[in-house]
Length: 123
Image (cartoon, rainbow, N blue to C red; front, side, top):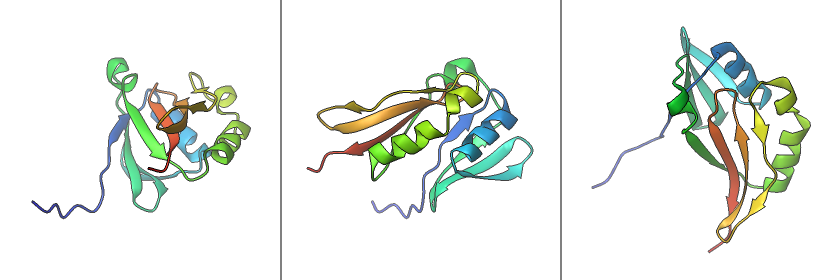
């Protein structure tokens, strides 16, 4: 079967919608309100997700997103300079971890959503 898909988007929750909106804008993502408490967040071109004014601790703290980037070390350095853990309550930024499959670092958003930023080794 051929799937005529053009994009795929996940939905993530926000403990405090306004704070999460500011968090993603600070990351350099574009936040476009679609309706009250519901926005389209664009990372780059068709790399997007929906941010909604809905919070369930169990759901948000078990939600993970992996974003593959081109230059992990420089991306981590740029992320570190933003000082996100000092600006947003509950935000945590890890160091880079190197694994057999590639490398990554982690960022928890204000609602507890766990972001994996990484690169894969060439096969």
